[in-house]
Amino acid sequence: MVAMAIMIITSILSMRGLPSEAKFGVQSIFYYVFAAIVFLLPYSLVCAELASTYTKAGGLYRWVSEAFGPRWGWTAMYLEWQTIIIWFPTVLMFGAVSLAFVFWPESFDTKLASNKIYTLIIALAVYWGVTFNSFRGQKSANKLSTLGGLFGTIIPGAILLVLGVIYVCTGKPDALTPMPFFPDFSNMSTIVLAASIFLFYGGMEIQAVHINDMNNPAKEFPKSVFLAIIVIVAVYALGTLVIGMVIPSQEIDLLQSLLVSYNALWASFGLEWLGNVMALVIMFGVIGQVSALVTGPATGLMAVAQSGYLPMSLQKVNENGVNKSILIIEGVFVSLLSLILIVLPTVESAYQIMSQMATIIYLIMVLLIYGAFIRLRRTQPNKTRGFRVPGGKFGEIIICGIGIIGALLALVLSYIPPSQISTGSPIVYVGIILIGVAVFVAIPLFIYSKRKPSWRNPNAHFYPFDWQIEGRKPSEVSKWAPGYVPTEDEVEEAETQAINTHGTGKH
Image (cartoon, rainbow, N blue to C red):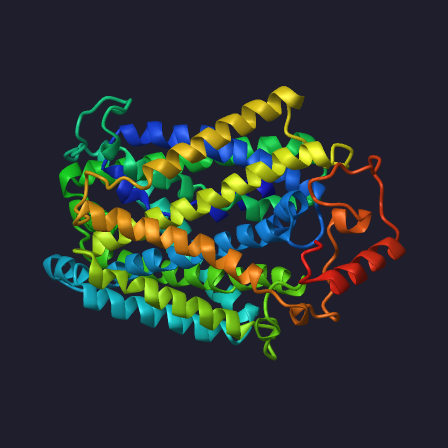
């Protein structure tokens, strides 16, 4: 139970987004708690049931395909991949800013961090450097990501909280702006940045696949989720308040304020030079984060490829087991998306628009997973579930209702330009997001429509979906009794049929 909680915590916690919520001061605590209740908790429980029910390879691709067929399963998998691709430029911009704060004096750091050309060059150099390193194999990438996670995220996070406590206890000046705990919901443009918290809490669909390794998932997993939520909310809230104490709300920059906070905290104790050391350490953490995720999306897409929905050219791996073709396509996407820096007025505005676009695409994928959960409860009611959302039918309605409403609310808010930062023309801001989201959702549907029988590799084993084995449509109700296990002949026949009918529309 504790191990699962730690896995959830380490996969979700990140310091990069703290400045965006620090603009809200004490209100940030409300947003963290609200997002945990309406998003992290229900989404965790839904993913846990799906993961414990459909244990074969594929993750969310299998979940959604079981409910709606491979068209939407592939779309959901693609949207997760695309979310991470869009996330890369934001974390790379943050890394470039961190590197700028390694230099001296701070006035020079701030000017360099605001320079779009510098940010673009560093972002692309870091990304492609990590990508080329990943060509050497997963072991090489893991080593970099593990060291980066420990020394670039966990330790700096602990230092921030400790410095904050000492700062308060020694009576240093407090810059937190007095404001009510509850926000003004009549002005939507002031709460847009809070929608990004939903993406802060993203990633449960990845960790949920480990639920079957628990001794008693039905009892232990909810405890793991509650424990993880308490720790995550506490760290996020305290870290955000520390930044708010050191930097006045009107001076907070989405990218620079975390580094400025470290500088100010160390300077208040006469140790200014340690602020520059922290910047270097955090930059190393960014490299570790990128290394951890640069091969992850490619691995997820391999399940899609092996079931016949990507060309054979994208199914090949090198001598180190790395799919270089998909990684190069990722790099092209990231490079093109990073060029938004040139279009928008500031580095901060580019960071904001990429964050919001990633949030929207991720939430569309989340809604597909909720839809799959509801559909599968009806089409496969007798399927053995290692974990069930508690509360029976009533629990399903409450959990899904809260989760879907929360996701829809955050999705709508993400289209509104925030009032706290300058994003240039609202028309350009909303236009970029609308066009970007439309294009990214259309891409997987277009690729699916162009699939060919030759894409199916008969030597690549992908366990068929339940509806393929039963010879029914995904929307039809399963007749299997609880605990039914298909025979080897049934599985082999379903695989053969999938190969023979692939590309004919008979899925």
